[in-house]
Length: 114
Image (cartoon, rainbow, N blue to C red):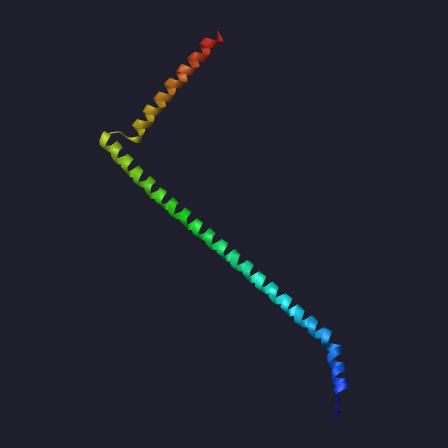
């Protein structure tokens, strides 16, 4: 094995020093980018978690509204039954009222055409 003297070792070291510095700087830069990317991913994860919470709250509100509406429908049916009204009776009364309103408006239009 050949012997390397101090001058040759110094020459090899100084010749490769810019490469070592470049590699170290690139590694440090890359490490900084990874930290930045990790920070952004963590921020995105927090935002997604907030979005999931909002969606869950909305689902809960909609469930509550659905159960309230179902309860109101049951109450309305019970009230109609107690009054002796059927859906058909209510619809007849509403259609009669609409017919009267439409007749009055038609009469009003016919009078203004003359």
